[in-house]
Image 1 (cartoon, rainbow, N blue to C red):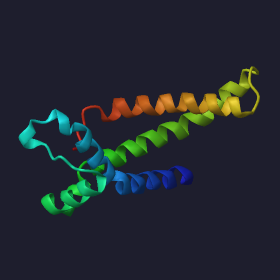
Image 2: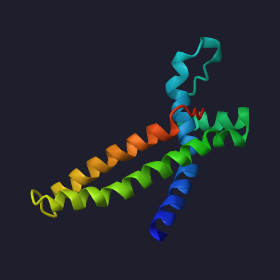
Image 3: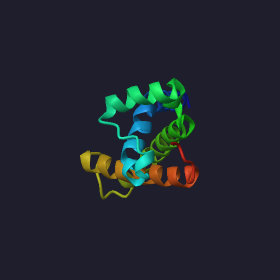
Length: 128
């Protein structure tokens, strides 16, 4: 339980630190879909970061913060909870030994669970 709490805190910190980059990434990818008069036309990430803070203020860097940190928590919780169970299940069948293939397979399966959890839990939350 302590390990889960630490990881959940790490996910929140990671989500908060990476949030400005996520905001800029979404904006830059979506720019061409906007009408020409609404496009931001950031030259690059640094230009986007500077303009975002100047034009909208520092709080604009926190847009979508709750969705971003929640995503990190759900993804990690899903992976941590399912990885060990999948690994035990794979070893219990006797078809696999404790080796790289077993770890890869368990990780792949845990990633699928985490992604599925994320989509079911946060579907419809817009963050930019």
